[in-house]
Length: 142
Figure 1 (spheres, rainbow, N blue to C red):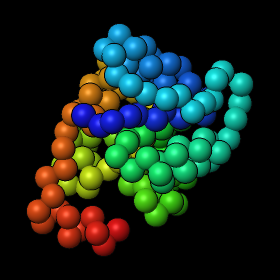
Figure 2 (figure 1 turned 90 degrees about the vertical axis):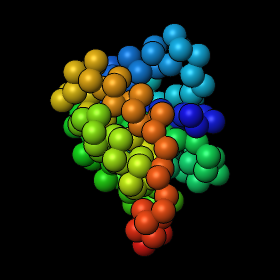
Figure 3 (figure 1 turned 180 degrees about the vertical axis):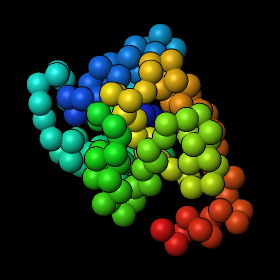
């Protein structure tokens, strides 16, 4: 498990972010919500940037980003050299993103994932370790 988890979303991912927060609260998982704080429209690149900057000096931590599909916010986060954001729509993708790619950010789509599946993806992402070995060589090339 990571030391801390940062959450950030645009308005389209806000409701799913709130559900993940409730899961964290019930399970005593430390997190910090970096916004947004309502359904009022905001721009996803701004919230990807906030989380990405936070992870630049919190390198043992992980992030979870939320937008409508997860596409835009993951693209925005991956602009930053220290970010390896993985858009995951299945538990298997979350597992491989950690084992093989050492992803430090999970991106989820609030408008495309059912809550139960999203929580399973989050759990897999948080509790799966990087396998290193041959995968380290590949990650170093990113």
